Every structure is written in structure tokens, then in C-alpha cells.
Image 1: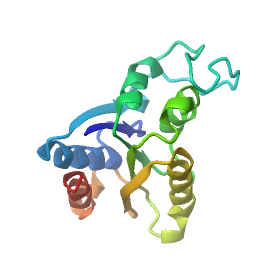
Image 2: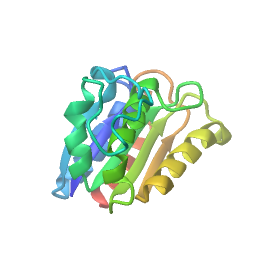
Image 3: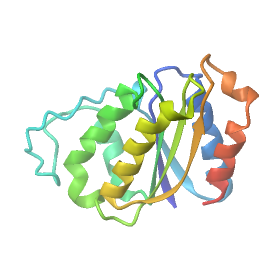
Image 4: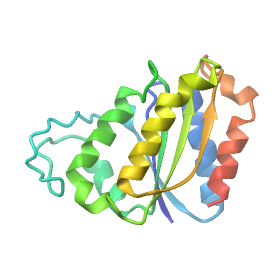
Length: 177
């Protein structure tokens, strides 16, 4: 499979990037090719809702979305990896997701798979519910098959996830594909 991993953390050595690393290691061991796009390391503007793309054409914005766009179109799977920022996806990954609008006609209903990896500082299960619902709604809308999630509560400081089993869960998810 061709897998696109979208990461949303602005911290390079943070907890969600560790989850992404572990997932990618598992997927590559199974022979899958992985394209990683670190959203925070690129300039991707939010969708302006101008509709010039017609949901299936070129976007008027000229930025780094052009780097990930062809990979998204060719991907068999898209993995969303983000920390929880104020009970939602990070702005960095959300800008990329919003730009899916320009390729909607090609990715909606395409036989793609998807997965969701997230980490958050709080430990209450309910605090992650809005993000679970957002991811699930996105996957349902696109018609993509959910392959699983790793939700890592209680990891706040950079690197604290390394003292948990969540990295192993992400690795196993990657290997299970």
C-alpha cells in the first residue's frame, strides 16, 4: 500500500511524532511505502472557500499543499496524527484537511483506508470524544475504511509517551495492515 501520514504537531520531538514514527516503522516492516508530511513544517494556508477548484481541480492558493496533494490522490491509506489542542485537531493539520476540498471529487468514495493517532495531556476519556467524533465523521464522509486508532491520554511533556505502551500500539497498528 501507499500510505500518507499527516502529522500535526509543531514540536519536532513530541509525543504524536513518536506515535507516527512507530506506526511508520510497523507499516514499512510489512512492505508498505510511506510518505510523511509534517504539516507544521510546511506552509499550508486554510481553504478560502472561493470554490474556484470546484471540489475537483487546482487550488488558487500556491503553497506547500502542492507537495502533499499528489500523494493524497495516489494513497491507499491516509493516517491522521495530531495532538489535542483545545479539544480539537492542531491548526497545522486542520489546514491540510480543509484543503481536501480541492480534491474532494477524487478522494471522496475512493477505496482508501484511514487511521487516527492522537495524544493529549488530560487523562479523562471524555475529553478526547470531540476529536474521535471529528475523525469518525471525516472518515464516514469520505467513505474511507477505518483501520484503527491509538488514543494516548495523560501525555503532556515532550517525550513522556515513551514511558507508555502507546508507541507499541502504534507500531502494531502499522504492522497489522
